[in-house]
Image 1 (tube, rainbow, N blue to C red):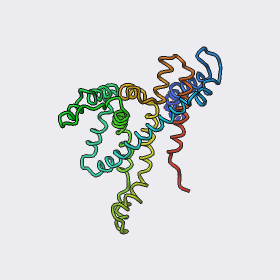
Image 2 (cartoon, helix red, strand yellow):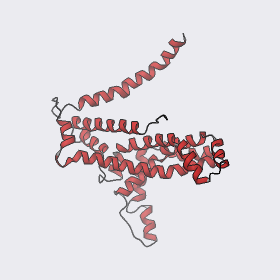
Image 3 (cartoon, helix red, strand yellow):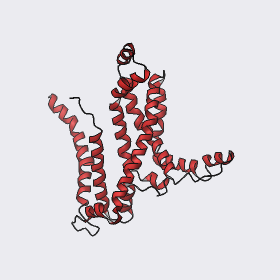
Image 4 (cartoon, rainbow, N blue to C red):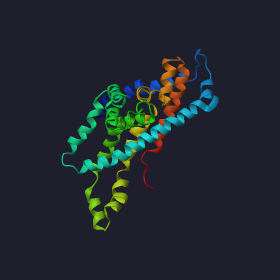
Length: 268
């Protein structure tokens, strides 16, 4: 009876994975073998890996570079923030305030930053007030990385905070009792024990950052070209679904590689 009940509970999850994970991936892989005329071909993959000027490979490198920068920026900000939160009295309240912006639609946040970074935005008004003058901030690499990092911050802070919050304080006290100072305790005890949270945060930030396309258009002004932008162009503009699917397959493989590279490995 117990087994039958558990199977009933598992069935919806299996159905969900089949319909909304495996089936779409299979459709993308299948579509990648057809050209714009609907003929079966390997030309899409040949174009991706051996196109003139290596356009798609450069775009892939560009995507990895931007995703890496965004991940590093969010990690540098998030780790001290998460560590500080664990020391506060009303930590759950502060954590909720950090997570709260994720409830706001991404498009609304993007348009808010357009207003902030625009020629007549609050940042340029402040720069003009102090005598520096109006600057081109919007549609630059800086604005794209800044906004993307801001949006991804909660997804890096949360897993790190959870690991630090659950850490056994006796280990830290034992380190102090054995003569270690604060830096040595952090380096040899706290940081190694929090690596699971760091790995989860890196996955949560790096993987979505590979496929950003809305921010590249609204904040980067198409000066920032990523794989997500290329997929959007092929599906919505050129109608070359085969090439768009090919880029999607490469993106999925890249995500799987990142997940494998950042997964927890047991000690031997």
